[in-house]
Image 1 (cartoon, one colour):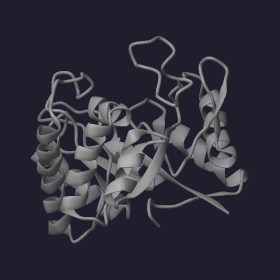
Image 2 (cartoon, rainbow, N blue to C red; image 1 turned 180 degrees about the vertical axis):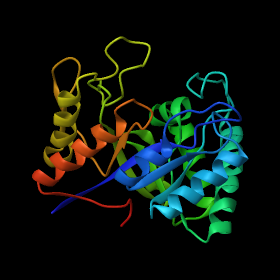
Image 3 (tube, helix red, strand yellow; image 1 turned 30 degrees about the horizontal axis):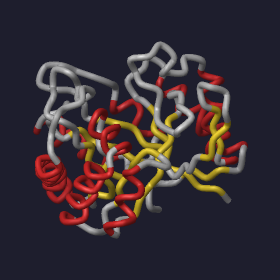
Image 4 (cartoon, rainbow, N blue to C red; image 1 turned 180 degrees about the horizontal axis):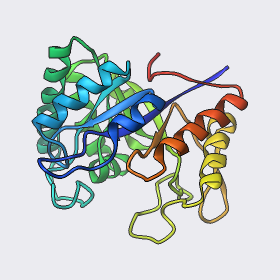
Amino acid sequence: MVKVDLNCDLGESFGNYKIGNDANILPVITSANVACGFHAGDENVMHQTVKLAKENSISIGAHPGLPDLQGFGRRNMDINPDEIYNLVVYQVGALKAFCDIYGVPLNHVKPHGALYNMGARDSEIATAIAKAIYDIDPNLILVGLSNSKLIDAAKEVGLNAASEVFADRRYEEDGQLVSRKKSNAVIENTEDAINQVVKMVTEGKVTSVSGKEIDIDADTICVHGDGAHAFEFVSQIRTKLKEANVEVIRLGG
């Protein structure tokens, strides 16, 4: 039987600003990527999110980003590999401390936003991210864009890698995500998004924006929990995967 994880980026509120609906989406996912304070989140939100994830028996991962609260970590920065190594260690270490307090393992690391996209394209950046994770704990799983430099770097340094696909994002011919700056970056139609997910998981294929079908590995599916109908959307994905004889399991399970 084909198996796949459902992950969601959580803990993205900050101070008095509330983003997303973590408590609502947690029951229907299997892995949580928790923001670590640089692009979103803070110490209070991190604490509460780890607590919620434990209560729901959800696998916990760190979601480090670039130091860009205003831009939500989605703006590229001119930052060297040594700085990237340090900012990943800093953020993952902070979340790991909260996991230790609650007696739950930190399972994986998934870079956020611009850091994720930069690592997907640039080998030096990808290697810096992978080395930072390995030096913290070689048993951690690096979650990266399927067929990207992040997956290559994880394997090179000796980490387990999980190839990630996106339920509601469109793909370029080279396997990269269509930039959010473009109008067609996000799939708005629920049925189209679900059909894309099922095809990626069961056939290992996705149709790019040019119409070309490309190969893709799908170990984990990213779903977004901040939409008005996120719970219903993810529930529908789970139903369709079950109908396709796909088992939804925790990452690394």
